[in-house]
Amino acid sequence: MNYATIKWTDIANGEGVRISLFVSGCTHHCKNCFNQVAWDFSYGEPFDSTIQEKILKELESDYIAGISLLGGEPLEPKNQEALYPFVKKVREKFPQKSIWCYTGFILDEESGDLKEKDKNTFYTKDLIALFDVLVDGPFIEELKDIRLKFRGSSNQRVLDVKRTLKTGSCILYLN
Image (cartoon, rainbow, N blue to C red; front, side, top):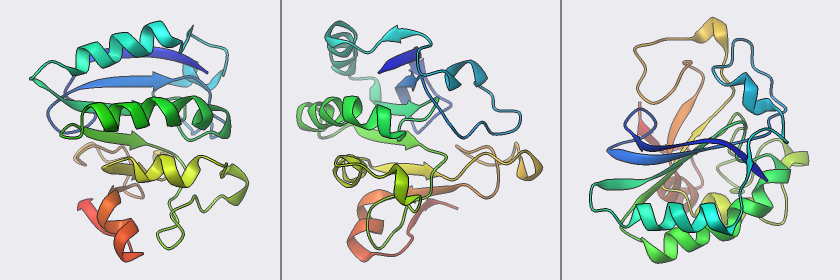
Protein backbone atom coordinates (compact mmCIF):
# COMPACT_ATOMS: atom_id res chain seq x y z
CA MET A 1 0.00 0.00 0.00
CA ASN A 2 1.06 3.57 -0.65
CA TYR A 3 0.02 6.74 1.11
CA ALA A 4 -0.54 10.10 -0.55
CA THR A 5 0.22 12.36 2.41
CA ILE A 6 0.16 12.66 6.19
CA LYS A 7 -1.09 15.69 8.08
CA TRP A 8 0.68 15.59 11.41
CA THR A 9 -1.56 18.15 13.16
CA ASP A 10 -5.01 18.10 11.56
CA ILE A 11 -8.17 19.56 13.12
CA ALA A 12 -10.52 19.09 10.15
CA ASN A 13 -10.90 15.30 10.00
CA GLY A 14 -12.11 14.32 13.44
CA GLU A 15 -12.29 15.72 16.93
CA GLY A 16 -9.21 17.27 18.49
CA VAL A 17 -5.75 17.52 17.01
CA ARG A 18 -5.13 14.38 14.97
CA ILE A 19 -2.71 12.70 12.64
CA SER A 20 -4.45 12.17 9.31
CA LEU A 21 -3.16 9.44 7.02
CA PHE A 22 -4.33 9.78 3.42
CA VAL A 23 -3.88 6.40 1.75
CA SER A 24 -3.56 5.96 -2.01
CA GLY A 25 -6.02 4.09 -4.16
CA CYS A 26 -9.74 4.60 -4.72
CA THR A 27 -12.20 3.14 -7.18
CA HIS A 28 -15.15 5.40 -6.23
CA HIS A 29 -14.04 8.35 -8.38
CA CYS A 30 -16.62 10.69 -6.84
CA LYS A 31 -17.49 13.75 -8.91
CA ASN A 32 -15.39 16.73 -7.69
CA CYS A 33 -13.46 14.63 -5.17
CA PHE A 34 -11.16 16.84 -3.10
CA ASN A 35 -8.26 14.37 -3.48
CA GLN A 36 -8.33 12.95 -7.00
CA VAL A 37 -4.57 12.52 -7.06
CA ALA A 38 -4.99 9.75 -4.45
CA TRP A 39 -7.21 7.63 -6.73
CA ASP A 40 -4.06 6.00 -8.13
CA PHE A 41 -2.94 3.05 -5.98
CA SER A 42 0.71 3.68 -6.90
CA TYR A 43 0.66 7.40 -6.04
CA GLY A 44 2.78 8.64 -3.14
CA GLU A 45 5.16 6.74 -0.91
CA PRO A 46 5.19 3.16 0.38
CA PHE A 47 3.45 2.67 3.73
CA ASP A 48 6.45 0.84 5.14
CA SER A 49 7.67 0.14 8.67
CA THR A 50 9.66 3.40 8.80
CA ILE A 51 6.62 5.63 8.27
CA GLN A 52 4.47 3.44 10.51
CA GLU A 53 6.98 3.80 13.35
CA LYS A 54 7.10 7.58 12.80
CA ILE A 55 3.29 7.76 13.10
CA LEU A 56 3.36 5.65 16.27
CA LYS A 57 6.04 7.92 17.74
CA GLU A 58 4.02 11.06 16.94
CA LEU A 59 0.90 9.52 18.52
CA GLU A 60 2.77 9.51 21.83
CA SER A 61 2.30 13.30 22.06
CA ASP A 62 -0.28 14.26 24.68
CA TYR A 63 -1.93 16.84 22.42
CA ILE A 64 -2.69 14.29 19.67
CA ALA A 65 -6.25 12.97 20.18
CA GLY A 66 -5.91 10.16 17.67
CA ILE A 67 -5.56 9.19 14.05
CA SER A 68 -7.85 9.57 11.05
CA LEU A 69 -7.68 7.36 7.96
CA LEU A 70 -8.73 8.94 4.68
CA GLY A 71 -7.86 8.62 1.07
CA GLY A 72 -8.01 7.59 -1.53
CA GLU A 73 -10.02 4.88 0.15
CA PRO A 74 -8.79 3.13 3.32
CA LEU A 75 -11.28 0.27 2.93
CA GLU A 76 -10.35 -0.67 -0.62
CA PRO A 77 -9.56 -4.39 -0.44
CA LYS A 78 -5.96 -3.67 -1.51
CA ASN A 79 -5.52 -1.30 1.45
CA GLN A 80 -7.20 -3.33 4.18
CA GLU A 81 -4.42 -5.90 4.43
CA ALA A 82 -1.79 -3.21 5.14
CA LEU A 83 -3.99 -1.12 7.42
CA TYR A 84 -5.30 -3.90 9.66
CA PRO A 85 -2.04 -4.77 11.50
CA PHE A 86 -1.11 -1.10 11.75
CA VAL A 87 -4.48 0.00 13.16
CA LYS A 88 -4.44 -2.97 15.54
CA LYS A 89 -1.04 -1.82 16.81
CA VAL A 90 -2.35 1.75 17.25
CA ARG A 91 -5.36 0.45 19.23
CA GLU A 92 -3.16 -1.74 21.47
CA LYS A 93 -0.52 0.92 22.09
CA PHE A 94 -2.91 3.87 22.47
CA PRO A 95 -6.28 2.61 23.74
CA GLN A 96 -7.21 6.12 24.92
CA LYS A 97 -6.74 7.68 21.46
CA SER A 98 -9.57 7.67 18.93
CA ILE A 99 -9.42 6.13 15.50
CA TRP A 100 -11.57 7.66 12.77
CA CYS A 101 -11.98 6.28 9.26
CA TYR A 102 -13.54 7.93 6.22
CA THR A 103 -14.90 5.60 3.56
CA GLY A 104 -17.04 5.89 0.47
CA PHE A 105 -18.40 2.42 1.20
CA ILE A 106 -21.44 1.85 3.42
CA LEU A 107 -21.38 -0.12 6.66
CA ASP A 108 -23.85 -2.97 7.04
CA GLU A 109 -24.73 -2.44 10.70
CA GLU A 110 -26.02 -5.97 11.24
CA SER A 111 -23.03 -7.85 9.84
CA GLY A 112 -20.23 -5.39 10.62
CA ASP A 113 -19.02 -5.75 7.03
CA LEU A 114 -19.45 -3.44 4.07
CA LYS A 115 -22.72 -3.47 2.14
CA GLU A 116 -20.62 -3.73 -1.04
CA LYS A 117 -20.03 -7.45 -0.57
CA ASP A 118 -17.26 -7.69 -3.18
CA LYS A 119 -15.17 -5.20 -1.13
CA ASN A 120 -15.12 -7.34 2.03
CA THR A 121 -11.93 -9.23 2.77
CA PHE A 122 -10.61 -11.45 5.52
CA TYR A 123 -9.74 -8.20 7.39
CA THR A 124 -12.83 -6.03 6.88
CA LYS A 125 -14.91 -6.86 9.95
CA ASP A 126 -11.94 -6.89 12.35
CA LEU A 127 -10.53 -3.67 10.91
CA ILE A 128 -13.84 -1.81 11.19
CA ALA A 129 -14.24 -3.05 14.78
CA LEU A 130 -11.02 -1.21 15.69
CA PHE A 131 -12.48 2.17 14.70
CA ASP A 132 -14.25 4.52 17.08
CA VAL A 133 -15.90 6.57 14.34
CA LEU A 134 -16.67 5.66 10.74
CA VAL A 135 -17.77 8.31 8.27
CA ASP A 136 -19.39 6.24 5.54
CA GLY A 137 -20.96 6.82 2.15
CA PRO A 138 -19.63 8.31 -1.06
CA PHE A 139 -19.23 12.04 -1.52
CA ILE A 140 -22.13 13.22 -3.71
CA GLU A 141 -21.57 16.65 -5.21
CA GLU A 142 -25.30 17.38 -5.46
CA LEU A 143 -25.66 16.79 -1.69
CA LYS A 144 -22.61 18.85 -0.70
CA ASP A 145 -23.21 21.01 2.36
CA ILE A 146 -20.35 23.00 3.89
CA ARG A 147 -22.27 23.35 7.16
CA LEU A 148 -21.93 19.62 7.92
CA LYS A 149 -19.43 18.62 10.55
CA PHE A 150 -16.76 16.08 9.51
CA ARG A 151 -18.38 15.15 6.19
CA GLY A 152 -18.86 16.64 2.77
CA SER A 153 -22.35 15.60 1.68
CA SER A 154 -25.61 14.97 3.52
CA ASN A 155 -25.82 11.29 2.55
CA GLN A 156 -22.72 10.50 4.60
CA ARG A 157 -23.11 9.23 8.16
CA VAL A 158 -20.82 9.81 11.15
CA LEU A 159 -21.20 6.51 12.99
CA ASP A 160 -20.31 5.48 16.52
CA VAL A 161 -18.74 2.16 15.50
CA LYS A 162 -18.67 0.44 18.89
CA ARG A 163 -22.32 1.16 19.67
CA THR A 164 -23.46 0.42 16.11
CA LEU A 165 -21.75 -2.98 16.08
CA LYS A 166 -23.02 -3.80 19.57
CA THR A 167 -26.66 -3.04 18.72
CA GLY A 168 -26.64 -4.05 15.05
CA SER A 169 -28.34 -0.77 14.15
CA CYS A 170 -27.12 2.62 13.05
CA ILE A 171 -25.99 4.75 16.01
CA LEU A 172 -24.84 8.17 14.89
CA TYR A 173 -21.85 9.77 16.54
CA LEU A 174 -22.97 13.10 15.11
CA ASN A 175 -26.17 14.08 13.35
